[in-house]
Length: 118
Ligand SMILES: [Zn+2]
Image (cartoon, rainbow, N blue to C red):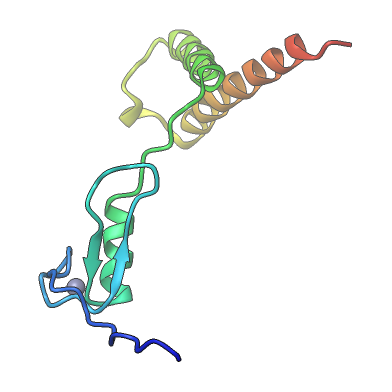
């Protein structure tokens, strides 16, 4: 004998975005005890997901590399003798960004080289 299935009913919760009646779309964050969020539509679920996207946490190595990039970019500011970036021309801005990025990447490379056992 096959048991009778109960009809699936939409949960009585309002959409977490627009407060219309939810229609079965839901999100429950894994690893948390937070109550699930319900939505009226995929559109509202997408809006909610973008608004609640977790910030990407830097690893300890990435945070150290970010500081190294900042140090390199700061040295460029000292070289220019100016700190008001709104006054930079395009070439100066590009150079500032490159030094920041290069300093970050070179620190990550230095860390990787220090970890290679051969
Ligand atoms: Zn909605």
